View (cartoon, rainbow, N blue to C red):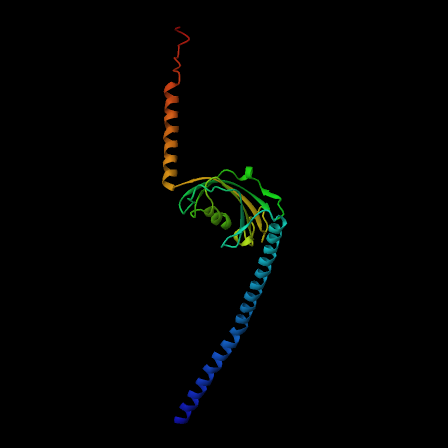
Length: 218
């Protein structure tokens, strides 16, 4: 009886050890496949970024007279109109008013300023191209800046599913007309609504009253 219990115990230990080993071996290919996929993705992304940066570098070198500045977010920009008087820049919650156009890296217009304007944007509170979201915060009022955006701060792997393709670097020129605080913007909206309401009430009061005459008795 003692030997039977011992044999049973050894058998169970061997069985569980074997099951764990098979379980671990069965999972290993999945782990290897995942690791291979990640490595391939990283290599592919590196090639994409290198290719885009090469194209952007060509644009910068094609006109040495234009001074481009490198941002901390991996894009480049140059001033067309620079405001050296003002010191205040848009911050989170401010309402920015701007016009912009989008070109491909060869300078062909994808979206014209006429198609896109006017733009009203709540800084860091609305969904907008990452490069524009960051770039606007570098600008002062009445400045016009051209940005060279790699795709990772533009429309990324998917494009905009309209005119902009996947992994497409872009040239964006932004003209920041003005920006005000959210409170000031809300006050402006309320004043406009009140003015419109007053105008409508005045129109109603000034409308001529048409007197109805009975055609039989008159």
